Length: 322
Image (spheres, helix red, strand yellow):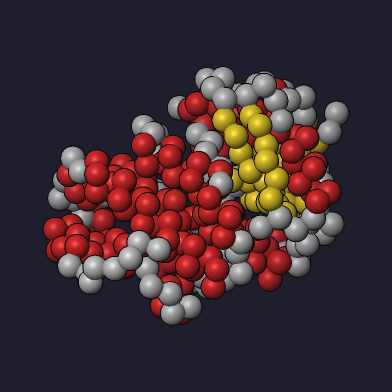
C-alpha cells in the first residue's frame, strides 16, 4: 500500500486524509497543535468529514516526513515559510515530492509557495493542486474537476493517478505560476463578491468578477504565467464556487464588511485578507494597474468605506473593454 503524508488538520488536510484513504492509500496526518490533533484522533471527525480509524496521526514532524515520499501540504499560506524553516535541517525532506494545496502568497516576501519551498528547502519535486473543490461537496460525493500543476510531467501524472476517481477528474498544466496566482487571487475577489452580495448587487458582482480577470491576467503576464491558465479551472472554475457557492470564508468576510463590520472585529481566518495585501503590493512592484484589488485593499487596510471605494472605481475614465 502506497504511503502519503498530509501536513495540516484543517478543512483541506482532513479532506485529503479522508479522500486518499478511500482511494486505498496508507495515510499519516500531521498537526502542529497537539491538543487539536489528539481531539481529532479521538473523535475522528470535524464539521467537514468523518475520518477512518486506520488513519495514522502524529505531532512529530520528523516521523511525518520519513513516513512517505509524497507530502501534501494543507496549511495557511502565512505559516508556510515558518514550516519550511522548521524542517529544512531534517533529513526526511530531501528527495520528497511536495504537493501544495495552499491558495495564498507569503505577505512578507510576496513569494508563491513553490518559490518559498525552492528558496528555503531546495525542493525541486513540487506540484500545486488547484481548482473548484470544496470539502463539503467532495465528502458528500459531489463531482468536481481539479487541476495539478508542476514543471515535471512525471509528478503531474503521479498526482493525477492518485486523485482520479468517480467524483474527481484531474487536468494537468505545466504553468505553476498561473495556477498559484489563480488560487490566491480568487480569494481576493471572493471578498469583493461578498461585499456585492451584502449590498444586493448581482450585476456589480458579475462586473467585478469579469474585470478582475483582466487584472490578474496583466499581473500574471508580468510574472511569467501563461494567460490561458486564467481561463481554466484554477481561476474561472474556482471563481464560480468561491463567488457563488455557500461555503466560501472569503465571501463571508465580504458580506460582513458590507454590513458595516471592521476587519479588526472579524474572526474568520480567510486567505483573501492576506492575499489582498500581497496582490496590491505585487501590482505596485510590477507596475501593473489593478484598480479592483486596490479598492479592496483600501477597504480592508485603509478603512475606506465601501461606498467611497466603489465610487472610486465608477469614476475612473471610460475606456475600451479590451
